[in-house]
Length: 236
Image (cartoon, rainbow, N blue to C red; front, side, top):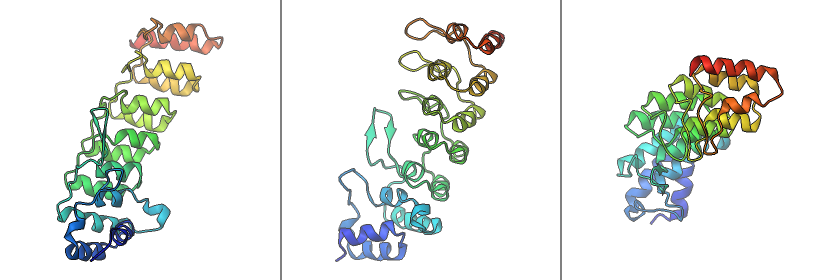
């Protein structure tokens, strides 16, 4: 009989042949979940192969063994907020940073939604490209969109990539704040503000306090902001 500890070592070590044999010997382990709700597939996908110096190809073989025994490709370990699900591919993107495995899961039909926030959090442009190509909803709605999340984290490479894929530059969160509001509040570099303007950022949208981005910009001492207000007026 195989122990949970031994199986965990095999799964995290991408020892796919041992995993396959162990689950065949001890099928009662197939339904295992840890105290965070993770099954063997979540745990496999959450291993950072770069940090552990393991081969992504072995992570794919291990994942395939686990899918073969019936673990769900879109089964969440946990859910939050009525919209977010911590699926295996989310673990591959957010924890494992394993794009080879993420691509494989997409090829096998995994739902890429919920993952763009994780890609944005890591400022991972390539992950964004992989997920969008795989059908991820660019402006998936939660408390914020992936684009607005990237702006709040000041991960501007990710934000720019999401804009290239059609993210709504003017989306407002519960406080009626747009990306432009947040960037002005944080004092972000002007080049990033110009990036938003180039993608159609409006200056006439009011936040919950009734303040527009254009009004904030006009109060700044830097005359370059006044020039940018004129640009906002041209695109709104």
